[in-house]
Length: 379
Image 1 (cartoon, rainbow, N blue to C red):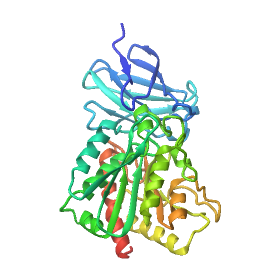
Image 2 (cartoon, rainbow, N blue to C red):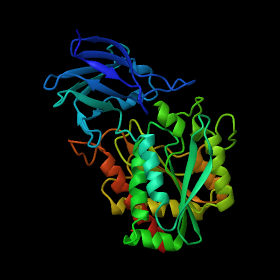
Image 3 (cartoon, rainbow, N blue to C red):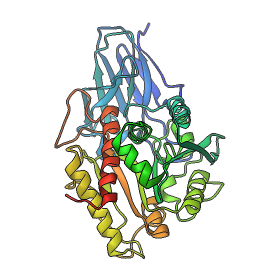
Image 4 (cartoon, rainbow, N blue to C red):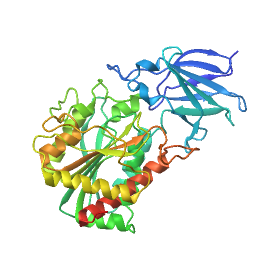
């Protein structure tokens, strides 16, 4: 009788068990509903404490980003609070591309995930706690296709309209950990960064743009397989009510500065991407983006500018993507913040790699950089 059991029937769970032989399991990641995307995994392992477990995630050459698997170590936790990394190796020639994860558990049950999960229950706790803070207004922007609310938190007394939004791609849980850190900063009455921003800005926060995909254990899409970050030019109630609701609110408030928070599977770095190539690009917009990037680069060694995405040529920006659409639609300085699944190549931390704790600290640093940016300071 086997002593190894694997379960994923819970919030954001994703794995199929193909077979178990002793302490070795052969697994496959489920595709997003009505989509070919797959990469996110999250499951629970019941095993004997003190005996090594071997988990083989197969078929990964067909995953959304095969370049994400080399040099990647899976995340594991025995208490679901502290997430460490465990030795993992990728062999593209084994069983359609296989990530072999090895772990020696100290207890009889542990969890394994692509990155530390951010559950919908934790999301609701974040909304409840933040909405009860003095000076915070809660706005229910709309409803998802699965019937979940699209939550927005608004605060601040200033005229500069700042939008922070995350998890258009639900498997990028780094983004909501970042949000938690940013919100903790903004709601701290003693934090000077929060005091400065609340005085100068009206801040609009959508901690999770894709609740359905988050709960379903998707990597990149909502309940019906729509990639929300390709819907901003023409969102519809049938395919992308989340984007439609957020963009409608932006139309009501206007946008001066926007940050769309994401994570990248392959690039071992934190970086931002801008709006090069939008039809109405101005030098002032471009200078504002460049100045923010320089400030953030100076503020934290977790950020860098060497690695990132190629820039679009003039007039060639994809306006279905939020950063480009928001910059074009509102004349805003907009950007996409990307965090890694792997550890940082230039500033590694062997025990946890890139972690929820580092996401949260980066959230505050991004806000502190915004304070300097608003004051017109530069490196």
